[in-house]
Length: 113
Length: 115
Image (cartoon, rainbow over all chains, first blue to last red; front, side):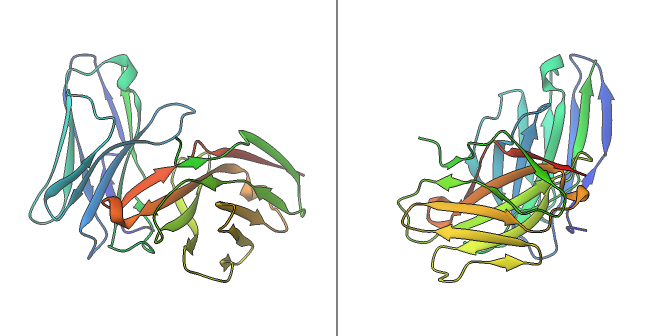
């Protein structure tokens, strides 16, 4: 168990809809990262937060947004969903320092129909 | 330039044999961390092993070891005595603390262990 909690595990929705993915980081970790993994693809970095502040943005679409709350949990909002947004979305958290690994949640598998 | 390069899309190994998964990295930082992750077919990402840029000895964790060659900027994962449960996707990653603690991932290597 990585200590990172992601909900829901599975999500099936229709094109054009909006969904919210939730993540609770490991206790004590201030950094939260979101990744997208499409079928048979590698990990695409979306966005990073540190202690409530956005730190870095990757290949995140304008239809997607995220935030980290004062209690350090994070939400990823996906709107105007398209078929191509179907993917496994990971949240990961980390402590500071070069020697701290990313600890991944089990992911949310999003299917857009 | 790619920060992390994994040149082996797929690898096969006989059960109980050792296998090396290649990873090269690109950074101009002196301080960085190198990591390997395993992703079985069930989908979760499992942290396997870490190597720091200042570590002089290769990291080991059970059957996993990291062959760190700093001058060649390579961080290969060695799995000894392969087991059927080792069949999975393996990702190499690097963390650069001085560029905002970004993590860079390779494209992964799919390992299949043959009985």
